[in-house]
Amino acid sequence: MFGFEWNGKPLIPAKHALDEMDNAGINMHKAVEILEDGFDCARSKRKANTFERCVTRGNKVLKVVVADIGNYCKIIHAGEFTAKKR
Image (cartoon, rainbow, N blue to C red):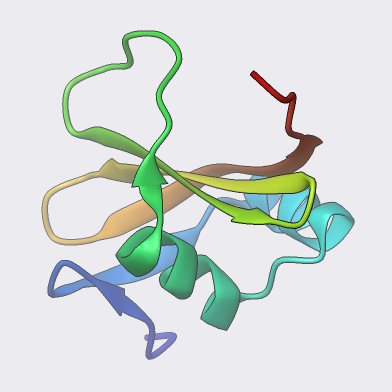
């Protein structure tokens, strides 16, 4: 496959997620890093077996959303947004 894994399963991006990753400047190496080292940043409830992880870089937050399909994990969303001070 691609050679990228998360939670011991192959990690495969959806076609639209590849475009989102490109727009946010996230490659597959960085996506795996975000999933492994990031924090849970779910703002609302997602479907079962869906994980949302983020990392903060300066005043930006990078987000990757993954769905556990069974035999593999699929990146369904990736993005970058500005963090608000609270």
